[in-house]
Image (tube, rainbow, N blue to C red):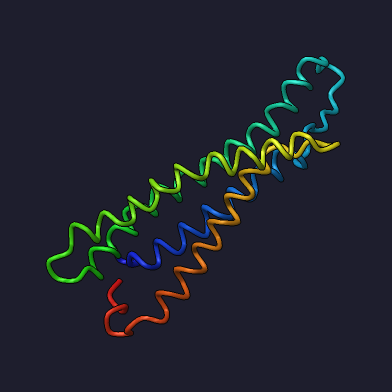
Length: 159
């Protein structure tokens, strides 16, 4: 509440988009092995350590993304409530949720197509669909930033 719903929505949207964009980088380019110099360590331990290295980076990015998404939903609802015309609060508060639900109808097909295309390339690009989703998320943040900065300054100052 101290930061305000607008700041929370913008920040969490930015973190969410960037986190999604990091997933293909982690899956494709993060070092999959770590140097272990002890002569006592077996090959099995090195293979386990290398999996844990990439796996830990992936889990970290996904946890950051999910935390940002969890913060963004209530912030968007608070903004909708604040900006709702008198007597239309219920409809206005439902719009952010309905918009997100509408994306759930289209996004899986589009992102599935991206994943299919990426898998057919000479060098498969794992997680490319997450990068595309993150890019669209950042475009949404940019659109929200531009829209909210063009509004009535008195109306926008409290959120």
